[in-house]
Length: 376
Image (cartoon, rainbow, N blue to C red; front, top):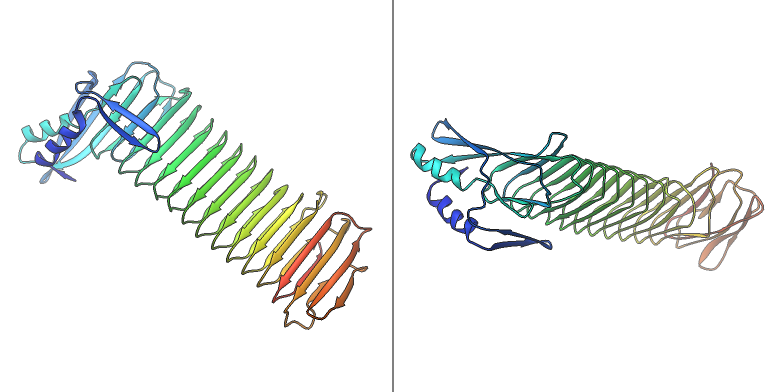
């Protein structure tokens, strides 16, 4: 809630300065004085000591490149022509006249295909569903955009970003709030200064990076690259290769055709994977379940403090090169397959040999735990 008119008068000077430019995450917005839309309706409703300001406006069909808000921003695609918006703000004012003056500063500014709202209000904008590209930004609130056939770029300084049912590509920049995407028809690039990231279904490639939070992805049709400085990474299904890296958390990956995964402090679980597998953890166990009928390539699994368990389809040809050191187990290496030669050496136990006539080399290196080679 904002008190007026004093707070809004200072905001007004900030908003309507001729040639004012706001820059954030590479997006520049220019707004000139007097560029408000003509087709607007302002309604005031008394709510105890406060007033609710509601502004509804519309624009005729025109090219749209960007939408900027200070507060919460909701964007929806619409099959109706033109652009429609609603601004809602709750303020405390001495009388209706002062509140009406404050409402003037809540009105939209429009210039060269860009719409700007410079008061911390709740904004809802409906734009043509066929808009090929739109850049949306919020300085103090969340962003919620959905039902668009084009591509979207979303920049949030302090709030959550939520994108869903977008047919094109998506790019998200968050200063630290959570980011989530639902169903995206193109590729996704997402950067967060420190919030968790969630995704349900992505048709194209995906790139996710956060300085502090978990990354949880559902289905990804393309390649995945995921990085977090402090959190876990979970990918339910990836139809292509995966690169996952975390400085502190577990990694769980399903269905990938190639994997490179590294964790400084967490377990790694690879489920129904194939192709080249490279997994390294400094502290945690590794479980790898190979895809029946899949094609394995030369791979390596390594942990410095934990167990390694590999589930191999009964008819898959693999050449095993395993070494387990500093283990307290009476059986440092266990195998369900005949034909492996397990030897106790001076400082380690090794297992060498071919399964089902041999095939791609699978290197297993463990320290402090044991290695299990299981039939799936």
